[in-house]
Amino acid sequence: MATKKTDGSSLKDYRKIKELIDVTNKDLRARGHKASLELVRESIFIRGTFPPKGRCKISSGVKASIKGVTIAETRLMDLLVAIKSSGSIPKPLPWQNKVLSEVGYPKVLVKDAIGQLKKEFFDVETSNSKSRLNTWKTMEYGLNKLDPGAYVTTDYLIAQIIDKSKDPKTGLTRTNQKLKLKQYYKRLGKLIGLPDIDDIDKIEVVYEPKKRDIPDHGTLLDLAVELITHKKYGWITACTIIYGCRPSEVFSLFPNNNGTAKVFTIKKKKGLPTIRTAMALPKDFVDKLNLYEISRPIEFKHPKDFDPIATKFLTDSWGSWLDNKYPGLNLYDLRHSWAKRSITASVPTGLAARCLGHSVSIFEKTYLSTIDEKDVADYIEGNL
Image 1 (cartoon, rainbow, N blue to C red):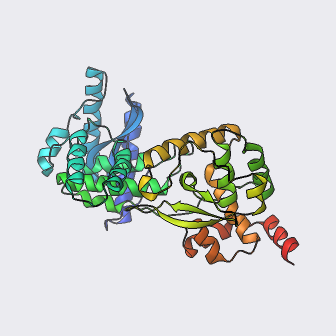
Image 2: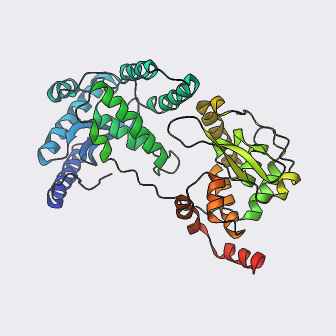
Image 3: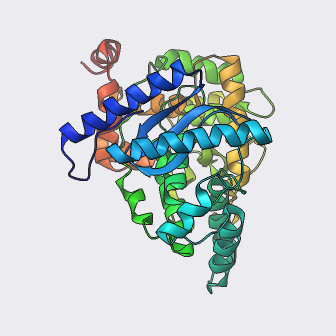
């Protein structure tokens, strides 16, 4: 994926580099080589199908420039020769030892860098060891996406952020995942002293709410009635529809008999979850579905008990179950439907945002654009 240069280089120079890469790739194909060069932001990567990974991109360690294209092509050929000889991608890469010494990189494997980071992380004194452990588990989940046998370089980390933040099903970038990986990988790079680790900050992370065709209110309320009896996922599915909490938060939700519920707000980077009040929409469905009878795989009564890894595992399996049962429907559609119901029910924007655990600006940006003709008609019928 080619992107424009951001370091002040002229568009003319960028076009020359892109044209040279296109010519080089055409020549590589003509010579029978099943690999190519690709611009990823300001660096040149080697793309191809390489054992044992399959289709992937490998950093050439070369910045985008006219001279860099020639160097990257040479490294591509060296890589193909090495793979033909060994049967797999070599570690380190043929040029990597030389690059490490030339730019002053510390020669550190991913697994060793993660070990250093873990030691440093837990060497810090804390008054809440459980919270710190949970924070590390969340970080470790993202760090373990890296190849433990690879050398840590900034180009490698950037390539992994771009690759690992994509949804494997849709190919779309998951903004929150991208932001977290940037934070974790930059911390890793700073720890071992990568001289150009601040280049990670050039990766743009812009939040754009996804536009989805969310089923109408009646369909999802019928779904809550249909699924409530499912032993593992029925209650949590119904509560996510009726209270609009995040999927990860439903394991902490406790309904009250006045149409409200207590639930954790789980979105902060540091510290324990906080407790907020959620609202049932429609209120009568709490009694209709008897949501006071709680049935869920795990439960968190106190913020200090929250386990992000167990929660991630369960929400993933729950999401897969829902998608298999109703293809195209995802867990956040259940939450978004609550937001749309709150708008058509004339719930004040500030109150609705607070119940969802959002700021007013995020609520408006995310949900007001989803209102369609049917929602307007429903509002007129119920209020005018």
